[in-house]
Image (cartoon, rainbow, N blue to C red; front, top):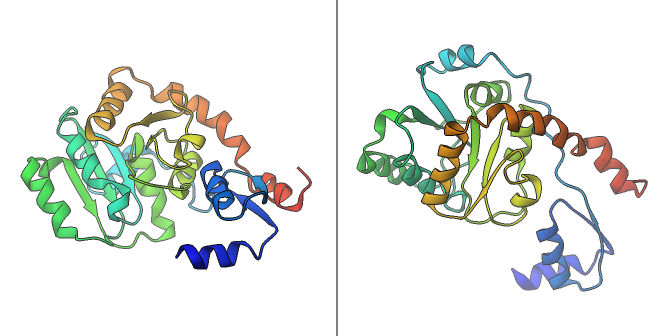
Length: 235
């Protein structure tokens, strides 16, 4: 992989990266490369935010509970097992929505849920999520959690920005670059205790409105127009 990556990268003379960590990776292969940086723009093709109770009802959930969301393909590096362990240490009124296809052993995660005794608080929607249904899951939740073990940048975070949802990310790759800590969400260490602490702080200190207000301002820098200007060298 390293040989092929070097072969490809050295054929280019300019790079546009969406996280500074990726820029550092490129420089390790091709020193002195010309780099431009622009964060991943906000995804805006998934419709509008729905009424929360309406979305919860459509998903067949209890409107009297609070919901955190894990969204996207489920692979080992995304750390869903860490989030499941964290759920044991948060209020029983907080439930977890898992929306996305399994690319790892689904049975292993469901067995973990049973072992932890949180079957009633974890809701799996493991079919492919069509584009016109994405807003259901983001509308139903209070906060999006990305407990990744490794990452470059994240499209899920940019969907959360579109729906004005606070975000919890782990301190890996480019994720902390797009989630200012304690401003639009939390940047935590890669372990269940840190993830649980952030979820508890969010609900106990009632940070929702504070974070949403900041998200509305923060996401203005993530426009497609801005990225196009950076690519064309006019920004």
